[in-house]
Image 1 (cartoon, rainbow, N blue to C red):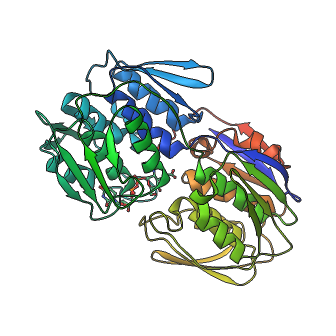
Image 2: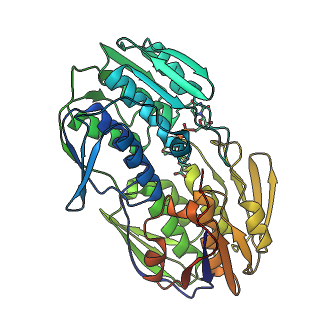
Image 3: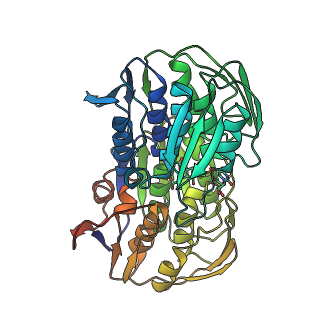
Length: 426
Ligand code: EPZ
């Protein structure tokens, strides 16, 4: 496994270019299976989660070639198969293949995705959508097998605006017979990006980005070229890194500010100066942070994927902050690690109170999930001495070239290899 050694930083300065969105790229790559002509996708981030999804597409016969910073994916000779659990268990997003395989072949058999460190992660809403479209579902021996002679349009209500369920139903509906109405669906920018890609291939989706979508099934899809949106969670993470280190000023480029407006507003509440342009955000930190309250919600609310990072920022702020996590049932695993660095955080169910302390102190900690790892880096930037962060494979799943991007803005961070390469599962 590898670890990061991070030293206390002085004021950060410089520029960070945001990469393509991991959570937009994963469903878009799965969607490529629906098309029997080659597609070209630009701005695909180089991340381990993306590598796993590309390996899964290859299991189904997809030919993938890099060409000038883009990826060409050719699924003309796709064959249906059952991918190995050892591969699918690496990323939960592997279950997005279900909608694409159902749409293309009317059949799929995939290992049931397990839970992970942040929650049980059930798939009942995904299966509710498939069943409403006429699929027959059986689960045994850890496999979920879904069959449908021909999927038909349906009116589906999601009891929770699940991102994954919304995406999976979109993938199954674009080639179904008739019209699908998806109600109380997710409205995240990644949903809009998936709809943009599917429509570029000839699908007929309306209302993406609102809580009700209409999908008119078409006979087939055609090739296209498409560019993935910037990663709003990566951008928000770097904003919080700059905010945490006093006297910093960084410029974040290749970003869509309205995708992270909750962070812009909440950071401004803490006293941080945030200046936005069409495709950049400047973050200027002062001498202190005034702690505030945050409550995670589905988009356009405060994103759960930035909850841990915002908590890390508030560990050395003035006063107290109340953090409510309403999306996942177990997303405070990282708090124990922050408290080992001297933070003062008390958890009560899905809420936590953070009381700002003068400073944290560096020690050995470990990343429990992708965003927890990012939070530990934020804490390490202001902690006295140095901090060793273990299990950084989680961080590599969602942050492109993180140590280069951090070094370029003045952070003293080193990657150290230790022991053999263990497995990094979600
Ligand atoms: C996506 O996960 C993201 N992952 C997550 O990002 C993100 O935290 C999450 O959306 C919420 O925004 C990808 O896009 C690959 P959900 P997903 O279905 O689709 C419950 C990261 O750090 N639920 O919206 O799995 C579920 O238990 C990752 O990049 C059901 O009850 O999220 C959870 O409490 C972490 N039944 C809530 O909905 C279902 O059938 C949100 O889950 C599906 C979900």
